Image 1: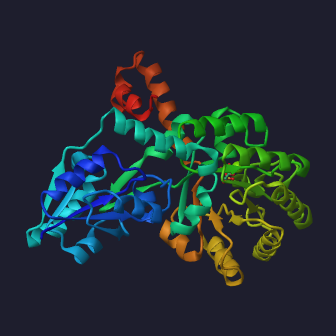
Image 2: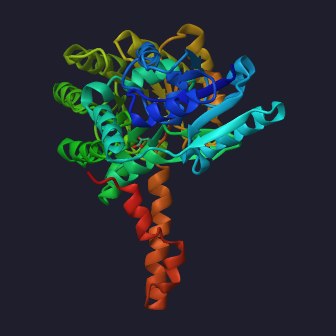
Image 3: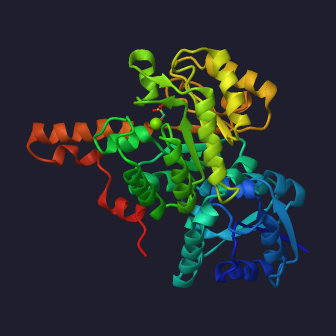
Length: 431
Ligand code: SPV
Ligand code: MG
């Protein structure tokens, strides 16, 4: 019997999958690969059921002869294991980022005479509805909230990008690239105080109040499914912070990061050029403890951000604080720096990891931007946050457009660099 292989990345079996199995059956023994959680997250979206449940689901479909685990998006290991005579897939992979996967399969199976079968992709109203339902489920607070902790278990480094509106949320949600034969996308979103304030034309001094910040979270969450990390500034008064924790948790936010500053907070990238006061270890630890004590779920994370390097208080102070804040119950440590050179971040990570190999570490490489994700991962960083790049890229583009319309007294000259209206329509989902 010839072997026919197909890989499924689904939580629900619908007529599209049944059609593939029916077609596959005509060619031989049907082996279905179930994509692992780690690979699925990278490729498509978070599963709503466990890997074991997905295996059982596929096994129960009539016509399936064997089910295996596919560990990575590309088919190298599967082809080596099975040497399938045929690989069957919906013809949607002839275009878009998934074409990289089809190219990979073609390269692997053509030399020994294997063939690809592209079956017409089933995307009718019913299938669309099932897809939408899964997405909606992923938006729900109880699914979204725990997802950061899940990602920390399955991703070598979790990548978050700044968002401050529905539209930037959609960019974080939907942008997928196929680069050097690998697909990649962001795992999570960072609701930056700097960018949320900037979008409102206000300084980053905790002036934009929590009600407004929550409104931004809501705008983002309405149109996305990825987990949210909230920039909670100093957390405010401990008596207020406990309410913030409750609200964020209820909304489905996965983590809040609070920084160990007190009084009038200024943006860290100003460093010592402006007056900024660091909180005492005792007081900030008390705030962490208070926040942890009001949490209702085990999902939510309170991450302590250390400003010692920003405020030039030295490495020893930063390390002492990290240990104290973990002791107080912090679920992670963010270490910040505004140096161009990542040396002090590398030193901190190395020395912190020598004492603590499990508390997640967060880095924000805005200034030390030459460092790669892989390097950060090797230093022991678990979450990388691209904290302000969407805002900083949009501003000059908008300013240049405004200037050109003023220069030319019409909009024709700017049109070539604008997003076509039809692309906006395809970015935005309608119910
Ligand atoms: C933010 O994005 O608001 C941050 C990171 O807090 S930084 O601007 O680098 O302080
Ligand atoms: Mg901030």
